[in-house]
Image (tube, rainbow, N blue to C red; front, top):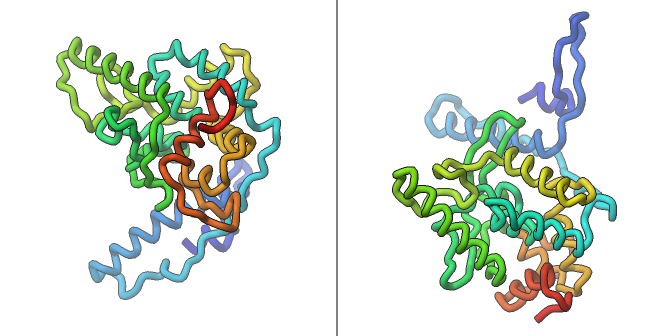
Length: 275
């Protein structure tokens, strides 16, 4: 832990000449490492393995929000182009949810038991994350605000219903019993699709559609941009995306389902206005 802090969060490797070289770790990476370390230390303290938790007083580095330019995101029309291209993909429904602003971890971690197609709602209860491109795990949502229930737009309900029917047929053909706890973003046999694979497919769809190259994370930023541009209150946009409302406004107002429905509607509403 001291090395992580003393070196300012440096990722070091030893070169052929024996010299240590490295580059600063991103604040998010340091925060993730500290979070895991604090859990281990807290457990050790509870079990009496150590007399006190030395990680208690360690502060994580401040993470400054990255500045997003127009070149980093798509326009509303480009999102439509992507959605149309993605309609040919087996996981079209999941990519539609990404268009509406779900984090990659949320889209990949969503289970069928978290989706109620009768009431048209989706609950974010967990996330499927990947660390350093090697390890992946299912964990609780990123923040307390990330755990939320959203009203699904009609096109998302239709796409999810079609995907569920398709997956039921795939499992039946393979002789695998249906399980509502399986991930929506899953392979034919029900195994979860890795986040990096989901990203790779996203990039391929965008390339096929001849769209400007952006990251999957910036598709989420595109959702925020489109909603704000359409006049959706910043507090509602923050609630929909499950992030701190202070990123868009200093005043937080309670958001109702009607407002959340209006926020999603602007993504593919032909009029481009709220309902």
